[in-house]
Amino acid sequence: MLDFRLKVFHTVAKRLNFTRAARELYISQPAVTKHVKALEDAYGIQLFERNGTKIQLTYGGELLLKSTEEIFGIYRKLETDLHALSGEHVGKLRIGASTTIANYILPRVLPAFREKYPDVNIELRVGNTEWIEKLVKEKEIDLGVTEGYSKSPGLKYTPFIRDEIVLTAATNHPLAKTGTVDPEILPQHPLLIREPGSGTRDVIAHALETLKIKMADLNIAIQLTSSESIKLYLIHSECLAFLSVYAILNELRNNTCCIIDVKGLEIERSFYFVRLQGKTDLLTDLFMDFARRYNYR
Image (cartoon, rainbow, N blue to C red; front, side, top):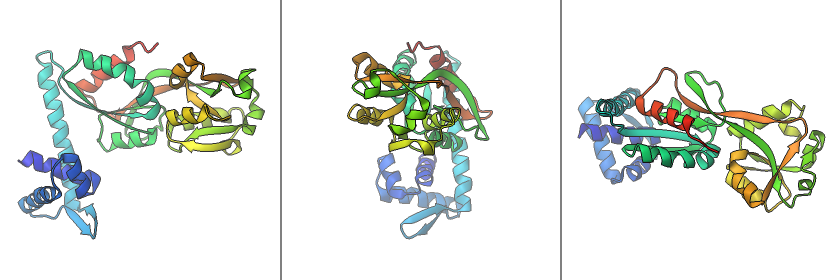
């Protein structure tokens, strides 16, 4: 019962919302309140400060949250390590991936990984690079897979695979006839771009600076939060967009999109595995090794 009460507390503490915690745990809100109250009575402290509909952790609540995360981490590691003694790979692997990787890379490798290791339960969360790094720091996930990295303190970045970002247009775009564009003309064309915090956006901004083009110089038509939404907008407009080549493989095969060469510009990057500095575990290492060896061609 204590373990479940700690799980209830942990969920409330991370969401700071009793209703969301109840929904996530598939129990009633009164049950959530009852379990939290039982912990407060057992330890003789208040875990949450309540201000109307808002709650926040007390100092005691922050201490308990830190301890529960350590406890659950030990449980996950114990399950994995004990099964590994008999040559089995069992446990839960929590992965967070930025949107391009989640949409176009992981759908290839995850089924193959699950086929080889069916007893590894994978939980995948998707967001931009900035958010994924935040989840790693807060120990909400075991491993991040991102399109860039911020060299954030406390995080270790390991190269995964290489990617190329290309300027893309619908095949009926006027530039499709020549397939090239001069850098100085680029700001004249409406451009679709990812939102701030996106690893792809950061890489594009850095690359354009080598051509003395700033983001503020571009004719940005709209900011969108995924490559899929950008592609759908792209084929129904005369806009351009910088996209991962992995994101447009189907469109290139189906001849709905084409690549426009920007003279003097090549944008290559690595995708990265991200985890806490100094933290290793068997399942994370297993997946990283499997993913690096997988043939994405």
